Length: 391
Image 1: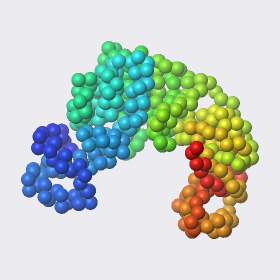
Image 2 (image 1 turned 30 degrees about the vertical axis):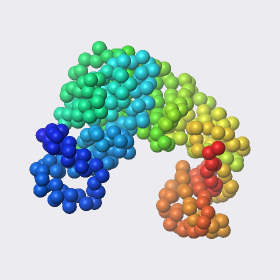
Image 3 (image 1 turned 90 degrees about the horizontal axis):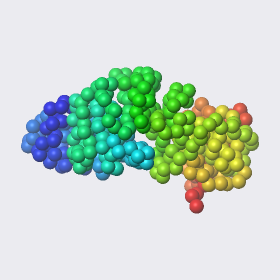
Image 4 (image 1 turned 180 degrees about the vertical axis):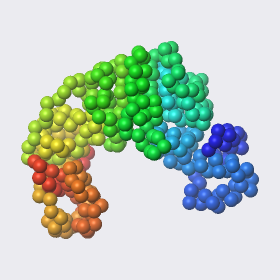
């Protein structure tokens, strides 16, 4: 989509056409396009159909707002999920921040969340189309008075007049996702230097960043939403050296300001806990084990076990009925005996894939079970059980 195609979508004709496509079926796109081209220019129809597809996909991130917003394909994919952006905006607000320079703003997801809390935002992106989309989104959601969108290279923007800086470097290149932080655009080293010069700052990064790459001056936070790890954030001007795992909705935050002792390792008890992904990424499994009075089943595996059931928001609990050495024949026989037809397969420290296991054991029956393919004290093992119902 060119800037000219996008501008056509903002005309009264373009807006009306987009509104008419809210619930259209992409499987019927050819028939829909043929019909619409009788009444509208072909380029406008193509742009509207593409935007309608993006809005439908973006609804998973933005809910109902997606059907008033505008997207680019890359922007829709890389934009912060709305609940995560809202949580970060609340952290900024709690720090007393009233103005933010949002560098590499993309389609404006974070800028919108900040503005909804009354925070003034300078949103900067160097791509003309992306900047136009961010500007249109601020207008569409009634936030244009608080969001100023500027098309510019972020490395040349003066942020000294703002209470805080938020940076979201691009983590995709011509060949797909970029894993080296110095391959971000701009590089992480530049982002860190820019953050250090601000009173408050946050840098959104990939959750797979190694802990040794976290600057000493930063607080590192890993965020999950409904159990899925979405991102990591480096905070400056808050609590240097602190590590957080934040779970949404909630939020619920587990934190530590120093190294944790290694968790105890011991035999599998009646209860098994699967820590949230943010807890694992933040290296806070030992902190959860301590809260639960539990132990690890293996020094290299992030499963916690205990003999007493305790509630925690940071892990999902399972009742374990069987602990067996790994063996497909034995597992198949046990599942057949118990008439297990609904089988959930989880793995950690095992080479076998869940779908491969299901094909080999062919579960049949009216009962359900969960099998964990893992290691116990270094030995390949199978743990069989079921999730604990919430009280």
